[in-house]
Image 1 (tube, rainbow, N blue to C red):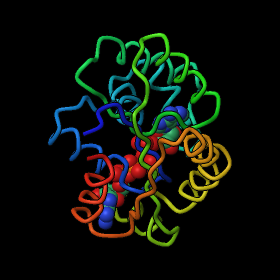
Image 2 (cartoon, rainbow, N blue to C red):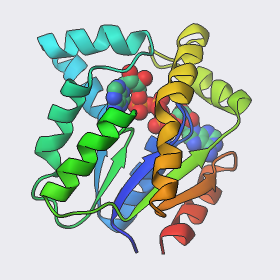
Image 3 (cartoon, rainbow, N blue to C red):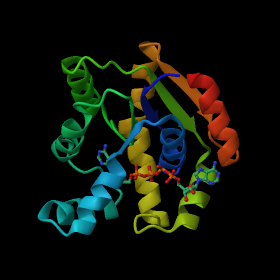
Image 4 (cartoon, rainbow, N blue to C red):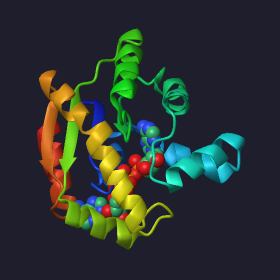
Length: 182
Ligand code: B4P
């Protein structure tokens, strides 16, 4: 089973859902930049306050902030890790590449979870987080298309990308991911 992983997909694709299941079953460390940022917001810190305003509009927080959060956590993880929601643009992908080279832990696979827009919107509205309303979802989808989706091509060219149909039930999607990484 591959153990240095990245899950990529539009908002609501189920990255967090699948990453949680996968890390529990296979003992990997789950690094979700969304969760880490929400923890920062809950702590009430100045950084959290700044991040909260950006996240509530569906924008990406600054690369510097996200990188500082990820960098410290990736070092000394030898058992395996799963990046969920990071990188989200080419600059973050380049920084990740340099960081992984430095710590000599190359990415083994990238799972790209694909879900139709109708279904994404339905799921996010049903979840109802602060950034899950129609206007903000539309902005998040646009940012995904403009900034994040070019990474699919980048990882595909490196030969480590696997596309997964994320429209199905959670356990069906999970089985497909297990097969792809086995
Ligand atoms: P994230 O926390 O990464 O959230 P997400 O993309 O909206 O959700 P995800 O795809 O993980 O969906 P989930 O499993 O929860 O990002 C939030 C914000 O943080 C961003 O907008 C940005 O502002 C900021 N941010 C994060 N990372 C950043 C970075 N690197 N750089 C800059 N900014 C960053 O699933 C969604 C819902 O669908 C759930 O309710 C789930 O139960 C349901 N669901 C999942 N799979 C399903 C299935 N197969 N069938 C039915 N329902 C399903």
